[in-house]
Image (cartoon, rainbow, N blue to C red; front, side, top):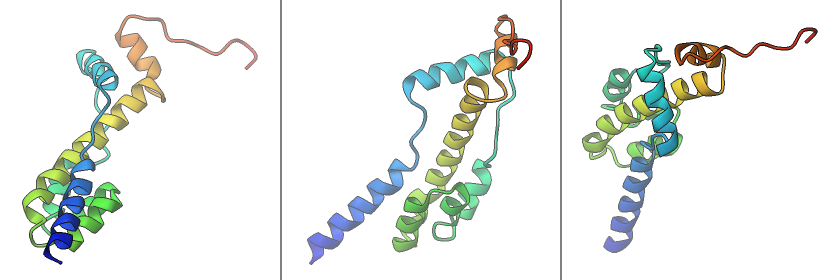
Length: 128
């Protein structure tokens, strides 16, 4: 029975740790291009708020919208406070990086990025 609990706890910790996943290496390189261009980041999540909220079991993860980590931290509280606070803050930072990358490479900020890099902004052909 003790081994089952240990394996379940380790699996839960692994699930919590996977919530911190950041950008792919190629996206990270593109994110650095955004920073180098001096463009403002998109920051929908506050790492400080996420970390502070995770003092309570999993609330910072709920704020971040990472429900597996929320359940993990809720089930393993009060021990989850040890890893939960930095995990929620790191997850919020990664969400911000992902949103910034998406905004400038896939969204409405693409013309700003192209202008900052010296490329002419693409415009729709006449009549569209």
